[in-house]
Amino acid sequence: MLHEDGNPAHRLRVEHDRDRLFVELTGEDGSGPWTVLAVDRASRRYSVAQGRTKEEATRAAAEGLSELLGPRDRTR
Image (cartoon, rainbow, N blue to C red; front, side, top):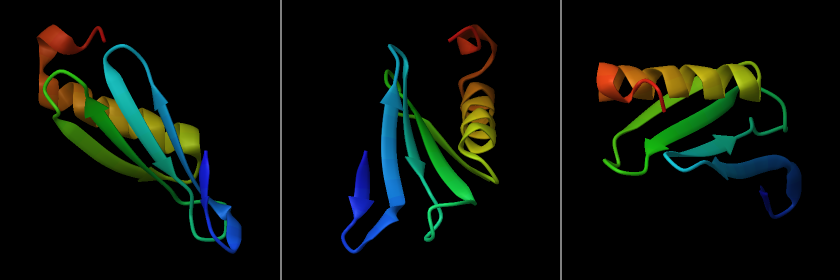
């Protein structure tokens, strides 16, 4: 986890699995809204979403990426 110099509440976190990368960024004060970038590792296609919580934003970004990739990749 990384944070802004002088503002440790403003964090950036990267999570991943075999198929996707998730870059999760807090709001300036460390709370929401969260912004999440979901990237498909094979194609490099991506989706960005915001939500009140990290979980909400991550879920929305993952769903957006699944829509971009189409039905054959929705099991990822």
